[in-house]
Length: 193
Image (cartoon, rainbow, N blue to C red; front, top):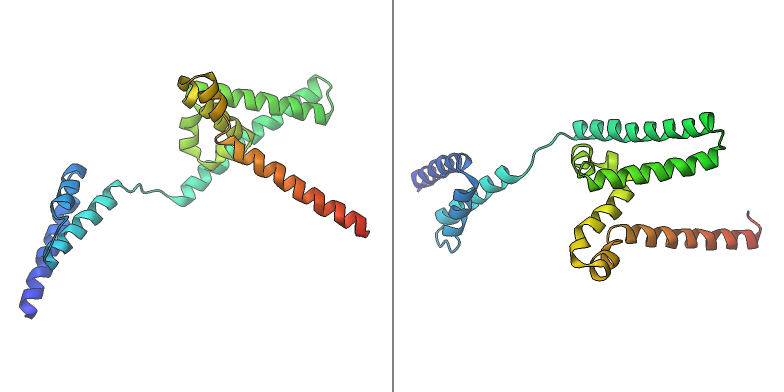
């Protein structure tokens, strides 16, 4: 009895190592072939094949490296924004508020253009949240939705779907502002503010 279990375990270990070297298509085939497995050995083989497939297709990544990329690229976007603001304030004589508005406009425009040229999605894949968090990420979300649905027409495609990504941001932003405004109003009535 103990010998049988050892033989089965050795066989399972050998097959599991065989599964590691198989291409994805063959692993899927192995899993499907053992779909209606009756014996424990067949069920174990199916599970081993499935686990090997999952391990092959699951991307591996380094969290510290992703954080560094997001920090560097996101910081670079913020640096560019600050440089634009400084340019408008120093060279054009604008006040900080007006320069900030022009900076936002230029960053949104640049993000939309880079999205249209399919450069921004590649940058987002590389840097992750570093490019998705600033205002440029919001512009990318709106522009990419517009590009994706334009083939469905102006009304039902572009018009109906353009805010599919940005809509929740706008909705919850306005709702949160309203809630905070009501809280502020109540605190002002009570005399706490």
